[in-house]
Length: 306
Image (cartoon, rainbow, N blue to C red):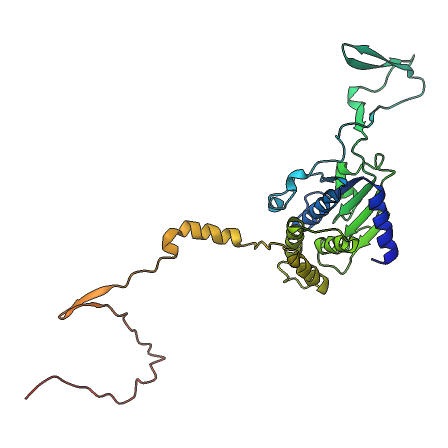
């Protein structure tokens, strides 16, 4: 990201108090981690930020910090304008008026000579209060992947920043930040936050590290690059807590095994003429691999007296 683009992004963030973070359908850990990290950063910076996803979060992202803040769209806040829309044909509406009755506003649409051709199912309501001036879309190749989150009409005046690394990304938006050679969107978001000079706390760093680890399969995938390792090191310096994929399985195994999992078995004993002695394990000979001293001379001592 060159200095000119960086300054442009800083200017957009400074000018817009309302910012939306969007992620496409059924996001994985990488995409959701990047979106939530950016949401936490901008919220901490004093921005009115909303993070939206068109589908319910998957179980695999449940441990990410801020997952409970994800909404289905950018609308629904208090205040602002309410728009009521319905199909219109020339000559079918004579006039529109309203009445106030018992604290309720009634909008009257008087039919013309041709009558009204639409019904109540065609009437749409839209609140403009939640429409952000800046939308940052994370790890989403196509705008269509956002479903109802991205209303092109409602967001026609909003600026769009597109952050992704996938080869199929269409490069949409006013500022497309597409890292084609990157391994994860979380490493791009880490670089994005760091370049803008925002603070990262442990929760933000942990989210992003989880995203990088997931996308690179614990840094084992062939596409893991130096930026992945560099950003992971930066996040760990910020206090990121790394979660192992198998930690839950190991814990379940320990709980199932109980105390015996850690308790060594007591030695067994056998009785001899002189008392009780520890029973030595039986030695079995391997015919193909005898001991090294198998052929060495042996000296036997007897106890017979003359």
